[in-house]
Structures are given as C-alpha cells and as structure tokens.
Length: 244
Ligand code: BJW
Ligand code: ZN
Image 1 (spheres, helix red, strand yellow):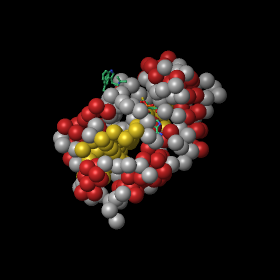
Image 2: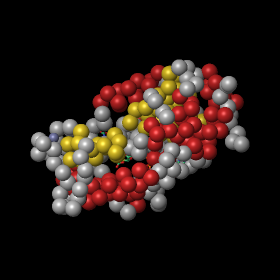
Image 3: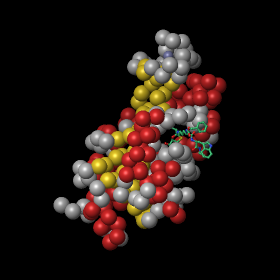
Image 4: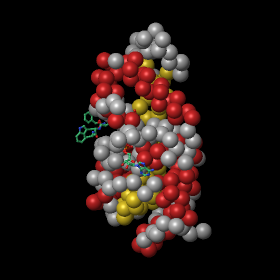
C-alpha cells in the first residue's frame, strides 16, 4: 500500500477537470523500451541519427529497419496496470484529457477514449511530401521504401525532431492543460518540447501538479507532489482511493 498525501487525495476527490501527460516510462512495464537511460532505445543509436527528416533522407533503409523492428515489438505487447488505471480514471471526471507522447497505441488498447497523441502513431504510415496516409506493405527488400503516388517517400506517421506536432492535437492539449485543476505527468523525462511545457502551463494556470516517475526529472522542482516509483504500481493505488 502506497502512502498518499491527504492534500492530494482531497484535490483528487473534488477536481472537475483533470489532464494527464504520459511518456515512454508508462509503457516500460509492458516491455516497450524507453528512449533515454542506459536501457533506452537510444543507448545504441543517437536520436539525431534516426528521429529526424535528415536521417530519413540520408538513410531511409536504416530508419525504416528501426521502425519495423519497433513496430514488431509493439505488436506483441499489451497494456499494463498503469494504462488500465488511466482508462478507469477517465470515467470519474466530467472533463478528462489524456495526452500522450507515446506512439505505441497502448492507451487506446486499454480503453482510453479522450486521447491526444502528440507524436503520432507507429502503426500508421504517410507520405513525406504530401502527408497522405499509406496503407500498403513496407517491403525493404529492394533497398528502397515505397513511394506515394505523388512520388514522395513513405515514412512512419510519427513526429521527428524539428517537425511540428499535429496542430489541432497540440492546441487541444494546451487547452486541457490550461483548464485542469489537477495535472499528472507520468513516466516522461520532461526533456522534449512542446510536451514538456504542458505540465508547466497547467501549474501556472493553477493546477495541482503531480509527477510520477522512477527518478527526479527537470519537472520535479515545479511539481506540487512527486511520487517516485513505477507508474504501473502507483496509478492503480491512486484509483483505489477515488470516492465510490
Ligand atoms: C518510469 C518507468 C516506470 C521508466 N514508471 N516512470 C532547445 C530548447 C528547447 C526545445 C528545443 C531545443 N532544440 C530543439 C528543440 C525542440 C525539440 C526538443 O524538445 N528538443 C529537446 C530534446 C531539447 N522538439 C522538437 O523538435 C519537437 N518539435 C518542435 O518543437 O517543433 C517546433 C520546432 C521546429 C523546428 C525547430 C525547433 C522547434 C518535436 C519533438 C518530437 C519528439 N519525437 C520523439 C520520437 C517519436 C517517434 C518515435 O517514437 O520514434 O518522441 S523523440 C522521443 O522523446 C519520443 C518521445 O515521445 C519523446 C519523449 O520521451 P519520453 O516519453 O519522455 O521518454 P524518455 O525515455 O525520455 O523518459 C522515460 C521516463 O520514464 C524516464 O524519466 C524514466 O525515469 C521514466 N520511467 N520506467 C515510471 N515503470
Ligand atoms: Zn504523397
């Protein structure tokens, strides 16, 4: 049983508007590797080598191999107790927004409805030039990824460094952060913007800010309440304390 502060429980029990931002740490207990850290995806490859348009243009085959490898992995994993707890939390509040940086689709699989995917979704493909969705097979045997009818190269529908996030999604996320009474930041290193600005916006507009992470992050000093530990253990404990 995890000790939870009385102040937090009071706010949790009376909040009308709740927003949650999640990162790779939430899916770690499902077996999806995080990005940073010694076990992270980028301990072998540097981000700039793979998660930019330049990297894709320089070596589309390498970038596609990395994404197909991760897609394969993500096809085999299932939501964990943290994903299910957030899907459950949604039912208790009049206004609830789940904002995720994750591209793995696990929140949807767990049943979350009001979900904003900031960095896209790894299961989709689109054209690099015209943005049109592509539903065909990705076959790398020829050494060249498929092309769109416009001649553009097909790429994963995720957001790389230096690219703009989907406009409507970001706008709705900042709106949800601005009106929240309570904001949770869960399993994210709080290093990547604009996502990292969302908890700060919420806090500046008056939300009580809770951080759940294995370790302190640059956000921790701004949090009203920091819970150190696994999100798959802490979130279910929090849900148990909701008034019936
Ligand atoms: C657990 C746990 C458990 C583990 N329980 N916890 C200088 C200053 C400010 C900004 C910039 C700057 N220079 C450039 C920028 C902008 C840039 C940026 O933020 N860079 C920073 C790194 C400095 N941002 C962008 O480029 C964004 N676009 C943009 O800003 O457009 C405007 C613009 C245009 C042109 C120029 C400049 C600006 C786009 C960002 C796109 C991010 N894309 C990625 C890849 C997605 C595709 C893919 O999956 O391959 O998104 S990067 C990667 O990082 C991925 C993630 O969503 C994102 C965040 O990572 P996350 O989720 O926080 O994971 P980790 O691994 O970092 O952390 C995991 C955490 O979990 C850790 O803290 C663990 O402790 C914890 N944990 N197990 C609880 N069980
Ligand atoms: Zn196209």
